[in-house]
Length: 354
Ligand code: COI
Image 1: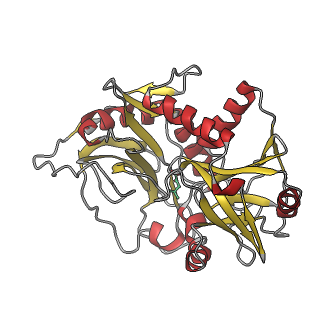
Image 2: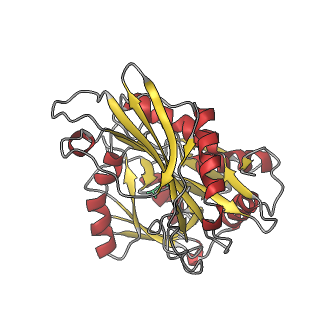
């Protein structure tokens, strides 16, 4: 499919790239294409970033038939623009699409479209340490219809936001509240997808956790509230007695691309790592025995985020004296090194835009 390009005639003023917020500023252009039943995806185009017009009855507003992705572009000191494992994002988008009854996209085409968009807006990519161009592809259902059924029309967008760190704490450890009232999802629902509803249902618990002085919540399973699932915007890892453990993908956890990369790196380094069911009681017991060595989250927006405190009911676990652990630091240095081109991309994870 051909991509038409309509460049802006009124480029916006670039922000100061120091101290960028996360996800509040948007670049000059966006990618759009439409889907119509019987015709497939069509009218691929890059156009100026601008508000869109939708009917108030558009299905996305009522039944949340919507999916999204998140990935980043980095500009290295060599001037090259790098995307981190973008094919994995569009492959995952198709997993989400399948679950939400949304038509799939062509992965290779989406990566090509993304490369064109990022190349056009390359001056919006920050070069500052910790900053990047956060990229948000998403698909929404656009039929004007109030019945509950799959839409027959959709719009796909890619928008770009020069962004700083997701957590203002940066690499300082974050405090996490283990949620014991609400649940995020259950097996068989949409937990493994990136759909807005998963995040909408998490907001109330997050507000309460913030009021109690915590950055995020750690979700337990939706049936027994015993087994660890994930944090609001990250997957979670525990280093217990030398072994790194993360909850296995069980249908209700997001298959994070940073999670996958972390597991692959640990295996390569010969660090014992397992994906299995792990209960909050096991984590607490390990803490009491002095064996809970490190806890960290992984995510595209958050990258690698050390956890300094976990609160579960009345138990407060202080992890590694509130300092970043050795493995956490090594994973952070390696992943960000590959993303920015400071380290060799031994596994072919990076796709350059130029
Ligand atoms: C990401 O890490 O890219 C996400 O989509 C999480 C979001 C809550 C910022």
